[in-house]
Amino acid sequence: MTDVPAGGRQAMAKRQRRQRDGAVFAAGLLLCACVSGCAGVGAASEDTRAADDPVRTLRHAPEALLSAGSSQTRTAMEMATGGTRVTIRGEGAYDFRGQLGQLTVVLPTDPAGAPEHVPIVELLAPGALFMKHRGAGVPADKWVRVATATLSDGNLVTGGATDPLVAAGVLRGTRRATYLGRTEVAGVAVRHFRGTADLALAARAASGADRAALRAAAKGFATAQVPFDAYLDDQGRVRKLRQSFSFVNGRSGSPVAVDSTTLLFAFGTRVTVTLPHARDIYTGRIAEAN
Image (cartoon, rainbow, N blue to C red; front, top):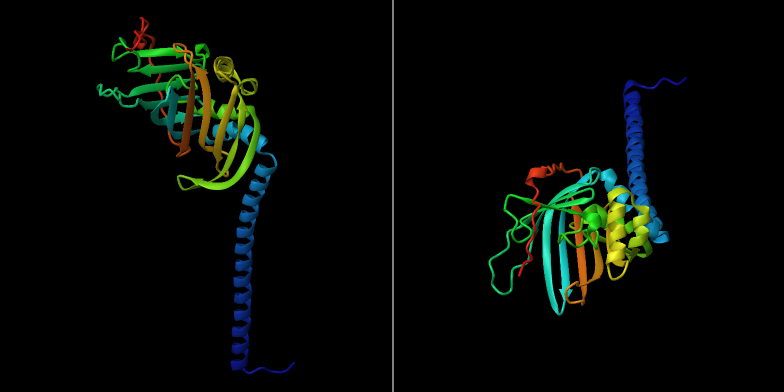
């Protein structure tokens, strides 16, 4: 074996360290590239599945919300009849697992210049809707309770805000859908779908109070077919849902078109809903507003 001077051994050791460090650095770059590539492949794979079977993707959206647990929400309901269009807005939070929510709903300003309406506080619960400041003649400290199964629309439009979980539940009745590609909602990357859901089919796929509400809506609306635009994030959660309902005005007999938009964000937010005691619920007659 040939002797190597001390200086040569040190130089050789430095070269070996440089080669070893270079190999580690290259491996790190390769790992990063693989991770990025895998992430890109994952998103592309989700897009492929969404494009191949959008109906199945949409029908599973309610389960994604149950997995998320809760969220904050904003709602907007536009009603058009006789050439007049009004918008009712709401904001609050919803517990998907407990099926409990609280919204503050603001009615539109009266074009005749009447005093502004006091915001309506709504509590959403399985099979029931509680409203405060809703209904002429109801004391300010009392709640009005309505069983959602008794409503001809299943509380999809009556409260001026669609129950977020029931709105998502309508997607279980998706008959036809098209994947329109990626976009953003409030800065979040989402997948955009457009389609039509059937309320009767959604009711069969639902359970408990939601089934009863959707059955009522399927019978009460002018049509059980609900056109929609749905925006799902990469976890399959609804971020934005716009649905179009149609019913017949009981007084005039004229058709009324309703577009309901639900925005969901801040998933996992803490939601506390306290339902009113029986003594706080108004049981008298509610006068009709002029």
